[in-house]
Image 1 (tube, rainbow, N blue to C red):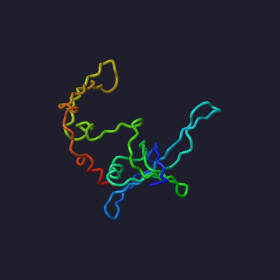
Image 2: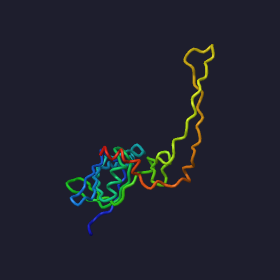
Image 3: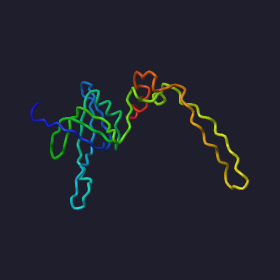
Image 4: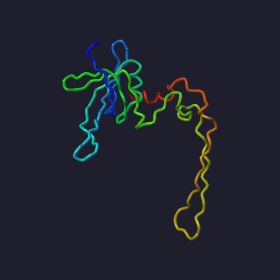
Length: 175
């Protein structure tokens, strides 16, 4: 379509992501990104935060389900899509949305550690052995530091999990 302006929005999610379904059953999500532009203050000779600009983003299809599952309030994101200005409000019909790795660590199906994905049991912890305190010291007994045990399986070489259903099932009931 002509007249559309492609844009890249970078900012923080503000509030909660709203997930709805159309009459045909297609998922659609809507969320607000607060973009804070950086401005150079010549008088002070330094950069400062400008006035926050709210951008209402919408996504549809499988991306909407992923956005609703992954994004929460205050997560830094980068979104691309077509931007429009209606009633002094910026709207972004998003084509792509991702977590800003400059601020967060993100795991995908293939990189999620096995312990977090439920593929391997958590490494066993060595029992803490209390160390008796010397007679000249007052106070409770101190415990010896516990050495971290190595995981039983090498999660770098383990097979990827076929889906996230087991990991994300509890969180879906909250929405």
